[in-house]
Image 1 (cartoon, rainbow, N blue to C red):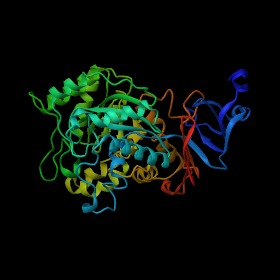
Image 2 (image 1 turned 90 degrees about the horizontal axis):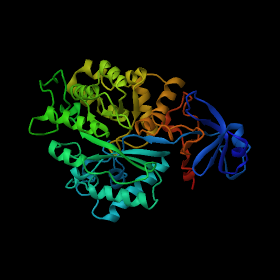
Image 3 (image 1 turned 90 degrees about the vertical axis):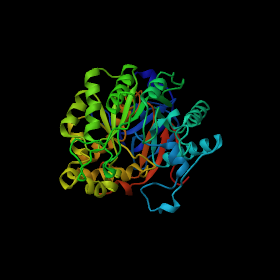
Image 4 (image 1 turned 45 degrees about the vertical axis):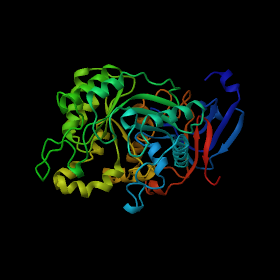
Length: 442
């Protein structure tokens, strides 16, 4: 940093605590300065600046803003506080149409953004909005919701950064190849990608192991093997392959809901044959039954995984009744994913499970079977830096480095230190683009 930069004022100075930057060397500093939404200085350099606003961390710990890389915000906002995995009895769960008007849709997104700010979440991926759900039951995933996203985005109302995937089929259901092909050729809306980035498409390949609908190479205990969801004149497999290839050819990011090893295998084969990627890496959502060999190949092709530790926790026994003990023990291979170096994000899939990332990280620790500083740091990176990589945005967010945006989560304690559940650590403040969007007690 040159002397002229150091002589300029800052809009915001954070000091008096531990600031984990998650830069390539894992630096920890005691101060951070922000100007015009970007970090301009760290450590002693930051302390030399005059600041319009100063925040004393008072021993707290600051991290890069948390990024939930698979969260249905519109659906979450419309359903909150009801989650699928919760104590809410079935007869009290919301059902049918959840939003009926433009104001309902605006309220759903604003409600979600308030909740995410309270949880220290500064970015998320909305995984599937588009015409495939225009007749959907809830009203949370169709073209009208895309229009509401664009309306609020263009009015500057966002308090969370959003990566959005287009959907040309049914949520958790089928998609027709001809319809998909027409849809993906439609132009994307013009947006500021730092606030609303429309990066690619969501494809549903199969179902889930507990329902014996994940497509698997080794049959379930009942003798079935699941099946693919895409449809077309040449059959499910050809349609699935063509959807992936078409999206890759057009430079779209491809996120595939694939839980079975056969659906993951076919995704990999198309990516390996294509030999190229777009501006953001392709990835598998869930990947419950990914094999060690598939994990290694995924890393080699530059693709990754978005996994949900809480869903694993809630469904393990249910899935075990279909898979058997040995296959269940090998399912949700988070440790192998992290050890391989493959891009891996830890996500909630809210409102299926809670959007509280702290509880997800506790479930992830249980999957790893250990609680030490190395494991905790690895998990924290997978809700901050790796999601920025998944977004194709690691050059400007995901770590606290000079030049990057000032998206910051402030916690009452250092979450990298073992001995305390993540879920018991309080969230003190959430800063997005240098602006406080949540402060505990206010």
